[in-house]
Image (cartoon, rainbow, N blue to C red; front, side, top):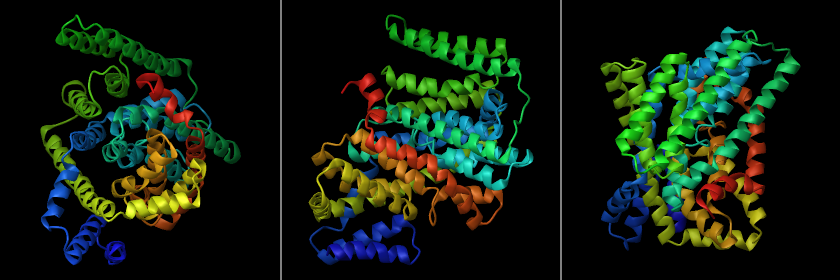
Length: 469
């Protein structure tokens, strides 16, 4: 019967069916043949799989990313990054990474980064004479920062499935995300040295100083935010009003390029760290801030465009939640048939050393990422891995980051890598050339993966500091 379940799933995939339908049909086939489970269980389990308060973050983070892309905020982020690091050798490569770091604190998905900011970055790099393959490779690699640096849509899904604090998962992604960015910038510097790339904007103390001043003002605002919200004796409307008026006045006075946009991660991470709102409510706050910037402040969003963004968000959300619902019933059948227990026993029979298990898990997840959509992989594999993780004493927060980074690398590998298909269309080159361009940029990601796998403090130090052990 277990062979029927897994065989039916693989057979459905082989016919070219979408993975969500393949999981649902395999589960229905198993239930129909076994005759021991009421068919209505399928409906109940699928509804139960998406009936979760934390999953409300999914549509809101998707909407926030779409709003940022459509409201011209990505252009402001790009110009800010250009002022900050564009004067370095290989300047636009560094701008690509820095821009993705900033945008990662808003969107939460690699797809939004690649489709929004990536479009601007590749065009600019090609216009400045960089090879298309170099522009595409660094854009693809930097897009993976989106789900690692908080907020993160895949981490929300993992937290729901594994019953792990989403707030801790978000904070745990900061250090690995920064490491990934540093390694990518080192690789850009190496390419610039070998291929004799120059800078893309003239060095100017005034231009760079303005960018650092803007960044410093964001830090000052973060401190003011913490100060205001730590004084609970003041009415909430007064604290919020003081912050809003102060930021608006500063933006107008200094004519900042991206100050208001840069406040998005400050508001989200600061709000969660101070307990002002939950990660789910942070997604709502991101949408509210993006709407304020697009409609009231920058005035780049029209009502017609807003309707289009809303419809795109509904379509994407429906696809994501249908995958979650289908994967929920499939994972439930795997659990009730004790397949997950059998896998755990088999894995532990090979070795009960946590380091060996993590090595095997990395190899397996890298393979799975080549063939399976990220959200489906998380929903199916979390029930399989978590019993083993618990028995071996591995921290679930650390394993969550390891799992997500593995699957993000899968977005850059054929045959199912979604980022590859998006950037292929943007760069207008063949799929084979796209794969060749991206392969060297897997290096920084794999180095980071090795570090967070075998050095748990990189992911756990900050969550333990803010939330306690």
